[in-house]
Length: 245
Image 1: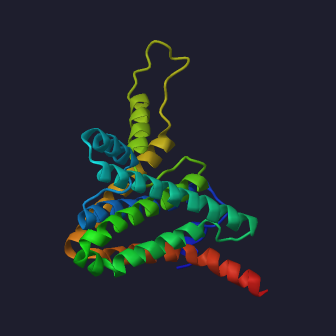
Image 2: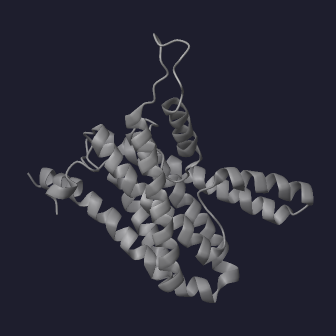
Image 3: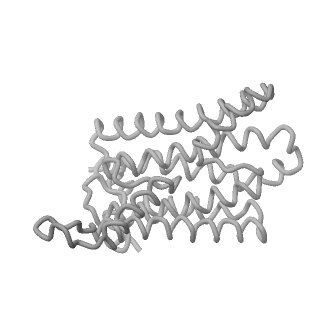
């Protein structure tokens, strides 16, 4: 198992490792976002929609709902801030698991979400708003991880940018180069494959998350948490071995 996941979350990066990790995290984000909607009735990775809803609620006089949207936005920002703090601290400490620290925190949050799902359902008036904030925090946490690792080339919790880039490359791909063959418009096929793969990863994750929550409930998040732990095992063991010697 360890050779299979070699390099996925290590500090030493490569474009292929970034893509592999991006695909896994995109799958996790899609599953969490779609499943979370079935659980609490709200998408938690779509900050554009949340900010728009804040504006609408302010105009309509729904101050409580507007404040709730602001809290969700702040939770997403706090998640991204937390990732930056954890990763930079880990890099200063020369940890192999620097990029794993926010993923471990995310897995813990998913574990809490999955284990306490019954209480959330029983005390929905109290726990659902808290759960929405927690999911927004998770989305910010995760999106910042792959953004930092890939130097903003890959994002995982929303696909608006991915679909835009995909459309741009498709436009180049089908462009008819007739007027100026010396400077043809050419698509970046590698980028096209990357963006297409990430969009499909998010869609697949959404399908799995929605089906899982529909038939299995909150327990669906436990395999997602376990997946993140598995990805982090090798760098964590490397740090433990280094400290032991």
